[in-house]
Image (cartoon, rainbow, N blue to C red; front, side):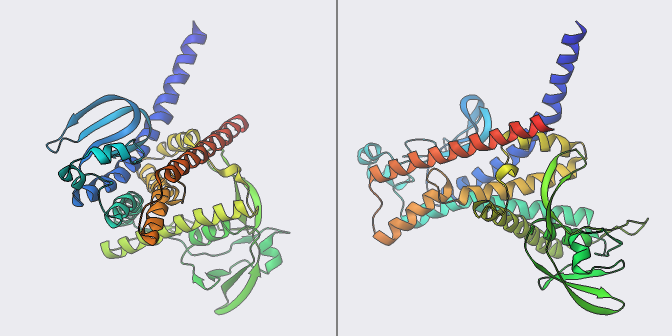
Length: 382
């Protein structure tokens, strides 16, 4: 009986601790992504049949005055907007349905629109993700301020990349490869994504600016939750004294600009990591799927609502980028087809599009399987 009770308690903790934060974060990101498609479609005069959070059987929903079915479905791992004339949730065209439409019906169908409006509707989803991230980051900067802690070197580890580069205690890093460094966190984030890449540091030392060259080393480190990450490390530490780390108040305009910069940093870091994976400069074992996201969501939720919302912003950027990949079935694949259509003056044949969507489905499934495999290995090793 005690064994069953302990098992139930563990399961309940898992559901509450991981699943609820995961659904909270994912729902925010997916809702705004699909809302981008929805709003631009309405603006373009396209009739929207369904707005769904999740896939599979409907759990509950309602119809609005435009006859759009808003619903929540059983599998909460995404969502979709289905337009009039779509053959599936992936907005694949139905030639038979298009031929059978009246002129009035074609005017309100997605595939009856010119290539420009269709491209705008498709691109609106990822754009909405980026805008959501900017808004969240800007709100966090507005209400909590900008972290302010100088990039001062307090200790240099022996036989480290920093020691080889000539860093000394008391140095203050002011720029890396010509880009200004305002605080220690900025420096850490740049260095962590540049393992094996030679960097040029501008360092303030005794009221003089000296130039140092160093190459971060790839190391495995553990975060506060015990998760292992492979990042670039210089081998320097920063001692924090009371009152040393502060949050600088910023006005709303500055907060928005900082939100844009933060969104750009997350996007750039993601793209650089993907590039490093393909060039074998980085390992693909850091690629995670729903299980990893759920675990991280649960862990971050223990820190409070603000860190969890920050995670939603980071995830929103990642989903926006993922959807822009030129893979049929994703938004980027649709945009690729529309670019070809604009150049050729006519769309690709129905067979070509069908083959493209099949290849895209296979690639997406392979990525999901690979990410889930990584997630399982990560859980087994933790």
